[in-house]
Image (cartoon, rainbow, N blue to C red; front, side, top):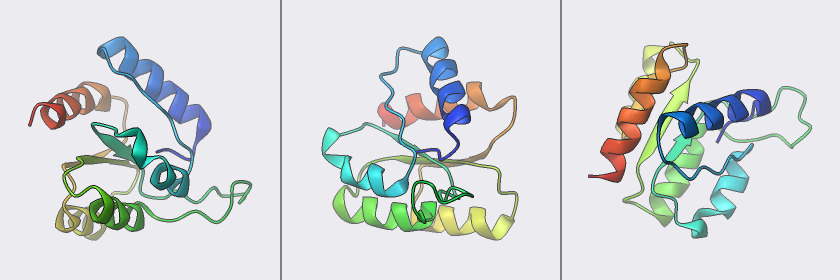
Length: 122
């Protein structure tokens, strides 16, 4: 779930190159919650999901999405991929029960693929 369309496509293409993953991209947390019946094995979630120009609506934060995911599918692994460097935000995610938390950067793909494989095989 990534509200930046270009980044979501880049992430999708990079993950397809790195592994044999079936990937569905979603631009909003609300859409993700509506589509939980697709039974994903892992969710990769951005922290800030409100588009800056509000074209897609006001959006909700990743923490709000996680709370609802854990209510509906408590064993579904969620990996946070975010630009946030605030340690309190990371701590809040760890306390919410995320499977992994990582900062977006140029070297994140290998780490993300490893986290996805760990989550799928847990």
